[in-house]
Image (tube, rainbow over all chains, first blue to last red; front, side, top):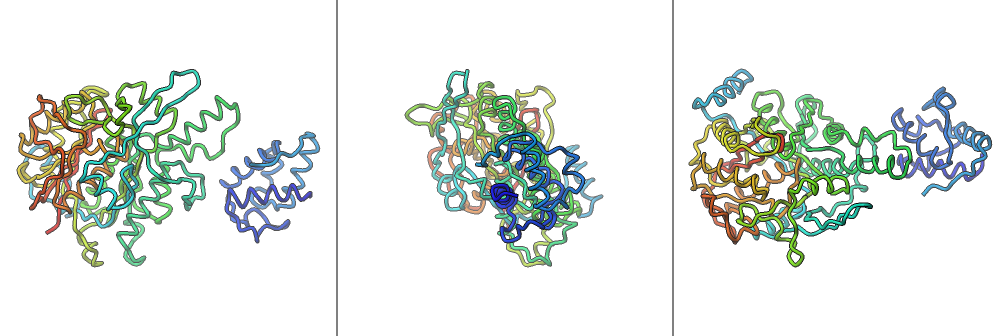
Length: 91
Length: 427
């Protein structure tokens, strides 16, 4: 996972979901970071906008709140390569 | 008073029979966010000096002619408000949560003094999450982009009710009331009856409206009920009961009160200086916007009966007073029908604008200030009352009112809903 991917996800978690930056680690599950099923919807929305891609429901929903940041980052990078979209910076 | 007694009391009041005075409900906390200020000192200064905070704002929407509107806005940063749900908050919901926290802070409950199952939330908003809805529409139709998954939750009219209940773990009734300009008046009155009826000990009540958004401003402008602000004196735009009245200023704001049964307040040693003594609501059922003086008079009489009072015991009326041609004419007529010309009348929308769903709660708090200060606020901008109105308008400066005991606060809404609260001073 590139540092850009990690930084972008971390920034969303800290700014939009007020996650404690110290808790953010590759093996942290979204549930551990305090996100519930409603937060996940909004989080996925923000991540998709930030990276300019769409995460298919079935790819993410399988593990839902139990996705780790590592898994999410890898999924994003696979999708980015597949779509050849350059990741965009979030505001 | 038990539930059965309250029902028979309400029935008697409806049928015009004399009733014994019902137990009043204590007001043990207030919080407010208004164009005339956020502190008691600030609202007192504006209220008793008749200082209007109405200003102009130019509405510019591509494709439409620019329009200069009279508005009254609050100095408030909604983005700084955090909620228990962690959702992004609509500006109005952020206002609601802020004033509810202030009111509960003032009420000063120890955690052991609140039973969550007997704590309710009764909240009014005419429209709901205006800014969220406007922004979502713009994102979809102008930017052609998708909208956030939380859109429904920020737009829904009960968003504020839910956030307040969540914040205070209020597990009793949590109900949103949408009756246009009477929304918070109805919310407050219904909560008072629920407490009187023994269903709840405490209720967080009030209302808000935050609709200074392009879409809502355009909607009101299209209806031709907004005052045209004079370029050199925008603060004089809204002139209730005046011969040259020409509509209202669109405002935003919120206010909350903590209502508590007298026995509950007494048992925890809370200081109680003001109470709600009566309430009534009804519907004109005659026209969607044209007010009906008979319906309004019925509501005022029913509220007095609910309080067990005679008209002569009321010493002040904070009128609905929108400064529209039809609205003020109907209200002047209905007040005269119930009270004659002996009760002093003020209309405070001249200074804070029309706060819609938040108006009733803000105006009730201003009526409580008049009771506490034993002084009646002037109606700002009322130089020449319409000669057709035979009422005792307070004009120019505040009037001393030693011995003032009861005041009425009127709200008469689009849709024909009339709602009247009777406030009282303890002691």
